[in-house]
Amino acid sequence: MSEIRVPDDLWDGEKIPEGALSSWLYADGEAVQAGSAVATVMAEKTEYDVTSPAGGTLRIVIAEGEAVRLGQVIGKVE
Image (cartoon, rainbow, N blue to C red; front, side):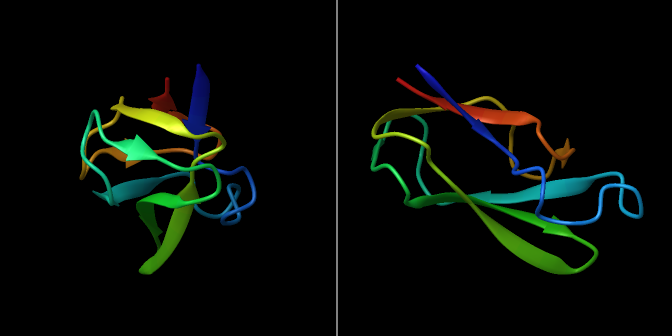
């Protein structure tokens, strides 16, 4: 199982402590491919794509609209 994390370098974590999970591009249980965008995260009015590290079945951990921090696990790929 691989973890989908908010990349540590999406924004300046010292200036912006957290963002929000804007949307999932796939539903829980759907198949995803390695390197494909699976979610969008917003910080300071800018949206960033979060990609899957591996192919498999998506398992959502953090719901849309919830606060997220850099490095946080937002989903898993089985």
